[in-house]
Length: 409
Image 1 (tube, rainbow, N blue to C red):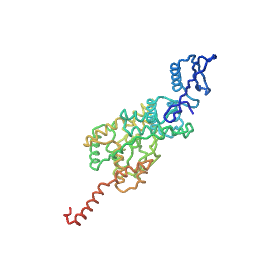
Image 2: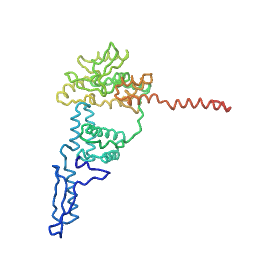
Image 3: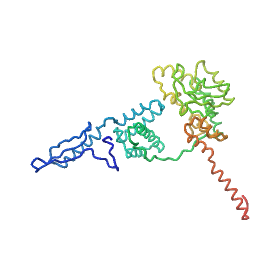
Image 4: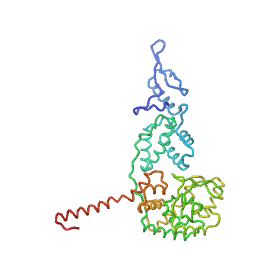
């Protein structure tokens, strides 16, 4: 057990004891400090005086020095602990996830200090939680940060670095579930019309073919990164399918990983296949990506990748610059005030449910790793409780009103 892992019952155990020793003649005494040194051996430090207040100040100073400066052999400060944990985990988690973990952990460290990881207590977690809320973080954001931080300590327990997770009993902030935003049929029509008009105004070498990408998104529920990292090799025109496949670093393609799953095959309609055929015919020979504008592809290939400025995170987040801003312009043109690109995927998933597909099938097609995620979309469609209650109430009241001789309504 480390020096800093001494909190019990909310009271931190003293690391430095103050004792007094009588002089040889027994008439006076001097104070001395007793503590364990960095080598684990018991230390005595004579203060050379009998002033109690001064001795207590010296004891407190020594206590502070030990708590701030002492690192038990085999232990680490939090920042080193984070790096060590991520290094051990390696590529078992996505690079983008590692970045999120580092952001959360560094934020935690800024709040409680870069202390020995074995000294972290529940009180530190509660302090961090409240600090995040006080500075305006949403409850959902705070809960997400805490989950990442707790996971590092759970791994430390699994690796026998800790006896227990100090944050295991922290009360996570609960926030009401957000309503899943989807586009109604008429809104989809307006979005597609606005996307077609938006695309027609811009040079196809520099602009995404928005109408086609939105159409494919509505048909397949592919994520934004899945659409942008889709290549022509993923499209089977004869089978009328499109595949979501991870990519490797080659001279023509960049490395990219799929979220949650390794691979899935999605259906296309005959009309969408023809749209893809027409789009491919308009592209210059040798461009592998379906939705990446040729000018952007050339810049990534000839400038960013040769200079080492293209990372795995970029392949997920920065394939096309200002994508969200462009989509917002399309929404504005369509007269829609609220929405995101991700809502295209949500709309497709709820459409599958609305047309009778099972939760398992939707989970497979959507590429969800958790059934709970799929179930949220199912509930968004199936939760017609108010409508069903209205019908039941109307029927029941009709019977009661007729029974009592009143006019039916």
